[in-house]
Figure 1 (cartoon, rainbow, N blue to C red):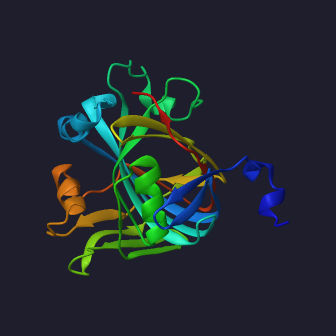
Figure 2: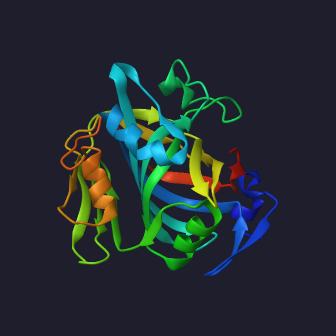
Length: 261
């Protein structure tokens, strides 16, 4: 028995799901991982337009803005192998449900209560099995490409390569500013799969540092790839985040989604 198997966080009953790239056990377990997550304020109307086809509302934060998270992940040891991933997600709630009065605080609350979640608009990965699982189980907008990840102390460099031209399409780089220890957030993800709206819970642990953005900046090329087009549509082509979170201690359980509409 491995150390992971002896850890109660990972001692969960498994359900098998047959994907086109092989069999996957749910929840998918992530044992040893790192991430860098910049958070950006964007124009609410731009975010709302992107969520319109998905029966979701963009959450309105202070100042009338929407929130976009862009997570760079290095998954060194998971139940489906090692791979890298980048997720672009808009803070959202299902259409017809009330939005929390204090949406930022809601992100820190229990997932069993009304909760601000995120809708992923792009999710490139580096392996075929991660791509097929994400698309076929949750309807996540995954595609396979090269993703570079380097987090050394306060310095970060991450790149998503355009799968057609093989040139850098999205780059996040710089040195983070002053920070404090903080929690890793449990996440609620909303996705559309087979015509149904799914609500998926992601349980996390490990702790992180919450930092001022320092010199961290996002750059988007003039690529015509849909991911680059969406980032530009959100106004993020030369964006600096409001704050960032990073860790080398991420562990998580990615659960099956529940149909809610």
